[in-house]
Amino acid sequence: MASNTRKEAVERAVNGLINEEAAIVSADPYRYSLTASAAFEEIALLREKGMRFEKICAAFAKSGLLPPDAKPHSLSQAFLRERRRREKTMPAAAAGDAKKPGATERDRDAKFSQKTEPAATGFGGEAAEKERIRKLTGTVVDTGRGKIIKHTDGSFEF
Image (cartoon, rainbow, N blue to C red; front, side):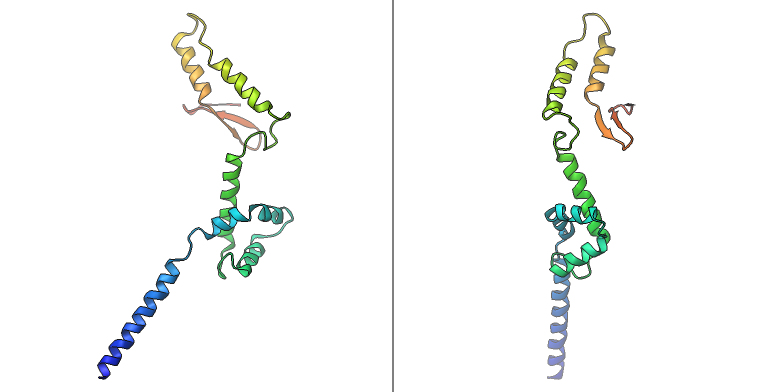
């Protein structure tokens, strides 16, 4: 009989460990990114006021949005990823790059129509066509010191 109670105690202990481990594993792996996405404007405002991520993280942990042992570095990384994602998806006119509303769309359409016109007859030929395609596939990158155009062949323009 004593071995039966021991066996039951061992089973209860193992089941307790399994349930405890399942609770740890079932934690939401995206809690930092979800919190950063939901409270992006608030975090950005607090950061502009000089608030450190340690205090922001502690406040979110206190409110229950993050676990009690939340890591400020993880929240910071999630916030920076969210900011990059929003900058990438934000239209150029909303970013403040355009001097006039809608000017970027008109400029882009005008540039596109200029670049897609057929090459002059007999001048340049295949080389001119390759140059035209190279310019069409370039991406604009803001380096902090100005904008450059990176091309798919590895070259760039200032």
